[in-house]
Length: 145
Image (tube, rainbow, N blue to C red; front, side, top):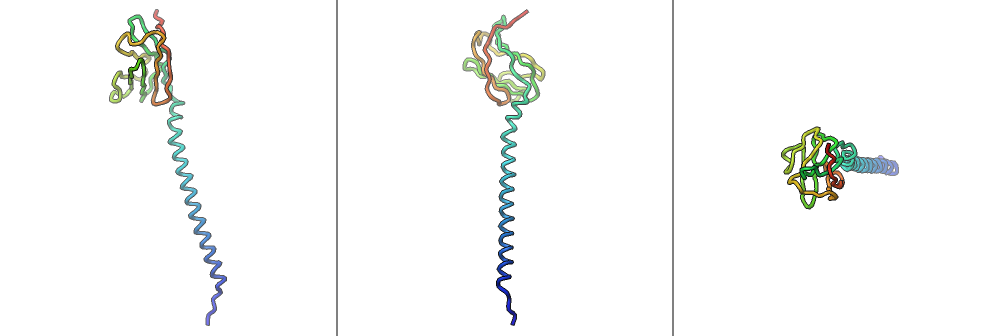
């Protein structure tokens, strides 16, 4: 009769079981790490966009006609600006389909809010560019030549 060594068979089963467990553990850890890196990229992307944005409102002032004028350093492509002034919301965008108040042109330097006499010197204007953090400017009198 053939006598099989049970001890040798048990060692082979044990090695196969440990190998299978190791493969499952490696797959689980690697899928978690890959999922984590995807989430970090999507969470960091808006923050990086806000750091690299070049458009910004330099000054808010009222000109001699009573118009509220915002001076912008430059308007880039795909710029959306939300402006809050005295319980009014203005949305300006380079995309004409997104805006309900004014259309920005790339390279623009000025935004006029209407109607005239909407703001007074000392009022605060809140604005948000491309969904980044809200910033504030105090309305001053425009310096005109």
